[in-house]
Image 1 (spheres, rainbow, N blue to C red):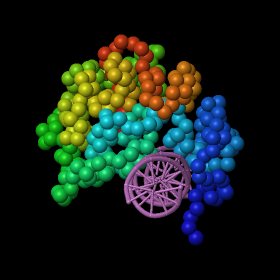
Image 2 (cartoon, chains in turn brown, red, cyan):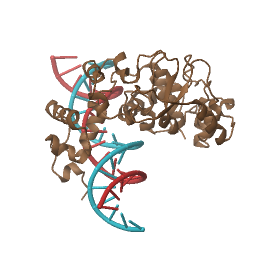
Image 3 (cartoon, rainbow, N blue to C red):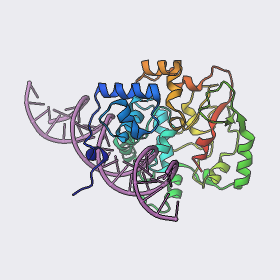
Image 4 (cartoon, rainbow, N blue to C red):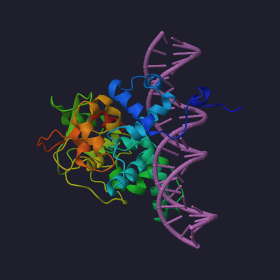
Length: 294
DNA sequence: AATACAATCAACCGCATCTCC
DNA sequence: TGGAGATGCGGTTGATTGTAT
């Protein structure tokens, strides 16, 4: 007999969530946070397993979700990141504020894969379909970045030094979500040698000046590719957004109001937690987000 | 208008890893 | 140190919706 899931074992409800269930889960998390997911169903009065509640929250109920169609920038970034990370959907999604791994994965499988094939590119290797794969990492990168961009540069120690130079404490009133420090990346040309960082991270990191053959886009002031998705200018941007924030960050202030009432549309309010309204020209990067690359 | 097919996406499954005792 | 439970992740499924015939 086949092994059955936790929901089956406990004879719990499965399938689509009703609006009543959503409301129960929302209300519970708004009041108490999720704490231990395994205890959420019982405390919230739901006949679901904790896993199901967690998934529903992460993929659908979280107020910071962007939803709606993916922008061209997001699409380019997904392709870019996939060429380096492969099917690491959670890592890819962590660089796309308001997007879930499930959403990114679905988008990839239903749309991008097909689009790349139409362009004669193998979505798995990011190489032309006619070429046979060799070394996975190297070939994947070479299909997207030039040889020059993949050239090795400084030692890890030198890279650490560069990153150290960019480190800055977070402002007191900055909603840091547990972070104590950020890297400051000034606008304009890249503030540090991305080639070095690439080397530090195992050679698969794109240089700041790299332009994917698929994207060909770099916005001024965006020293890292995912900065393109942050606030337009002068804003604060914390990578790895989904993992860093907790429910209290949303429910404790006006941000929650903005994101829930305007959910579904792309609007400025979704970034309110990361935009202090200051006129800083520098973007702030989550240290943990950077370390994900290494 | 009815049907078939394709596309999309929410949800589930099972495995790997983490955490706690 | 090992086991159990919790959590996270990627792959897959299946219901729903959209489009073509």
